[in-house]
Image 1 (cartoon, helix red, strand yellow):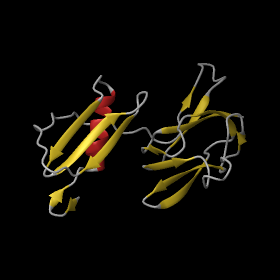
Image 2 (spheres, one colour):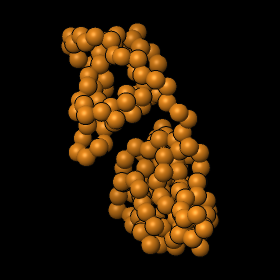
Image 3 (cartoon, one colour):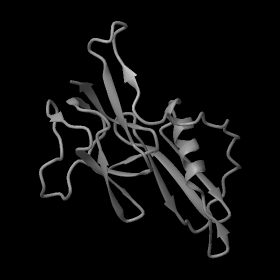
Image 4 (tube, one colour):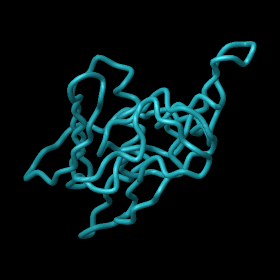
Length: 166
C-alpha cells in the first residue's frame, strides 16, 4: 500500500515478523524501510504487539528473509479423546479483526464459560474495517474455554472458543 509516495508494511509482512519473533527470546525489534518504521515489542507474557511509526531519521540494516507461513486452519476442528468422549470443537475467526465478547463495553458478554449455546447463536463480534461482524456458533454445546481476551486482535482461522458438543 502506498502512502505519501512510500511503501507501507503490509499486514502479511507484519504477521510474519510477529510469528518469527514469537519463537525467539528477542523482546523488541525495529525495522526501518523507505522512511517508515515497524517496531514489534513483546508485551507481558508471550504476546507480541506491532507498533508502526514514522521516525525522523532512523536507519537499520535490512531485515533477514523470513520463510513463508503455512496456511491458517479453517473453521471448526474436533479435538479430544480417541473414543470421541470429551471432544471439543473450536470456533475460529472467519476473518482478521478485533475480537469483542460483547456488543458494547457496557453490555454483558454474549457467552460465558459453562454457558450452553445453540448452533447459530451469536458468541462474539469481530470488528473488521469499522464493521461489526456477529460470529455465530457452528455447533450446539457447552462453552468450555474462551481463548481470546476482549478487544484483542484475531487472525483468520485463529481459535476463539472451545465448545463441547451436547
